[in-house]
Image 1 (cartoon, helix red, strand yellow):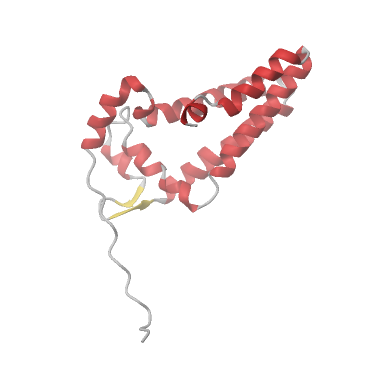
Image 2 (cartoon, one colour):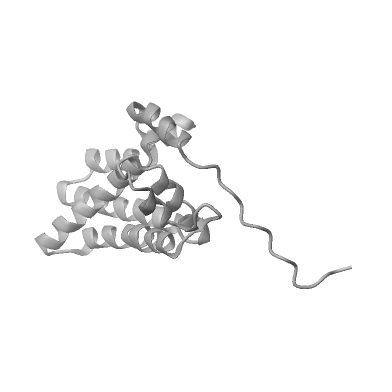
Length: 168
C-alpha cells in the first residue's frame, strides 16, 4: 500500500490509460480533467483551521531562509505562543488553497497563451516551493533536514485559559 501511495499511482495509472488509448485531442482533455480532479482534491483537503498550523513549522524548517525574524513572523508571539499568526493563515489559504483551486481551472478553460503559460509556471512552482520548504522530502537532503530540525526551539504551549464559570 505504501508503494502505491508513494508512486502516486492514483494519478499516473489514469494518465497512462488516457495516453495509451485515447486519440490526441481526447488525451489532452482527459489529462487536463485529471489535473483538475487531483488539484481540487488537494485544495479541498486544505479547507479548515488545521491547515494554517502547517505553515509555521514548514517555514521554520526552510533551509534557504536564514532570517529568524521572518521565520518567527508566522507565529503569534514566538516563543510564548506558537499558534499560527494571521500571516501564516493568509499564506495557507490564499497562497495554498486558493492557488490549488484556481490554477487547474485556468489550465482547463484558458484560450489565452500568456495566461496558460503563467498557469503552467504556477502549476510547476507550487510543488517546488513545498519541496524546498521541507528538505526531508528529498532523500539527498535528509541529513540537512535533521540538522535544521535540531536547531529549532522546543515548542511551548500557551498558558491555560481561566475557566469563565465554575461547575460543581
